[in-house]
Length: 457
Image (cartoon, rainbow, N blue to C red; front, side):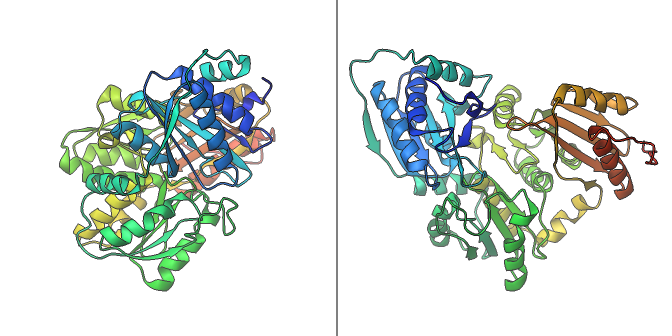
């Protein structure tokens, strides 16, 4: 069949809906997915986007046509599909979502037996080829569908891993009209949290702001709520609920690296000497914190498919990404925004420090650029320019190009979804950060560097 193959990304399937990802394509993906995973039931869930219900129905129809038993979980968060596959020992799972993308997009995340992610290196290309060729297995007996609700079981599982919240905490939550709002009632009933909340109504058009807390403009509302109400912290979830970003009582946002470091300290108290992973774009504060508290820090490529494989390889207890994904061995090595948020609240509930006091030592050492996206028409050539321009640094190519100097580092890597280079810089000094950023921007914009005073080591 004819379809835009660009919807098959490195980690999932994603595109404009229905222009690129239509019910017809979802039906074929369902058939191909059924043929790919081993025998057994398959879970399907979806988010609240305007096309997700129709896409889920089409994908389920494809699974059933190939004779598979389907457990329809309805409206869930992405981390709940991992929980379902792991706890119910299913052959696989499919989540209909475009995560934090704007409302015009939709997508499908696929998970295999044992909660192993299905990406380009682990079967997604095989599924794409079968969809394209339409060479599906011939099945004589159609499958069946079972409806199931797992929200309460998921909350109990997440809470057990995170730890008991020992005292009432005044917390603000911005659900962003996304899927995490399905947790609200359970959290109110099962924890001592005193919750003020925003945008709890499920709405895939995102009428208030895009549910992507990685962008500062989307966290203004939660930081204002925390300050106005005098709350102890705030949480902003992304659209499919698998990432949680936190702010302290002053409204200052924690980076993914800062939250990861706090969680690592706590986890190492329970698992002395354990291995913890961090991706190639995390702050230096993450491995420094892990090692300072007796753990073994292992650096990985960016992306859940790489990290989950590395967790198994290294028997790691925890992993963090700069983008707000946090992985837990007790959660089938899968990531969860809810577990990360609840664990931070547990830590806060047993600490004598406020969140700002807790994170202060981590904030004082480095300044960061945040992720800068620069358009590139020739990514290999531009990466080579970066290597040549910073050839006096220590270069590694684990994920894109990372160049280390004593007082700063930078990482430049291709986007997995768009014609961009993603640039991250961290330095001990704001001037070094600014100068390095200018150097890269001029270099990639093909502008002369003669007007810049560049002296950074």
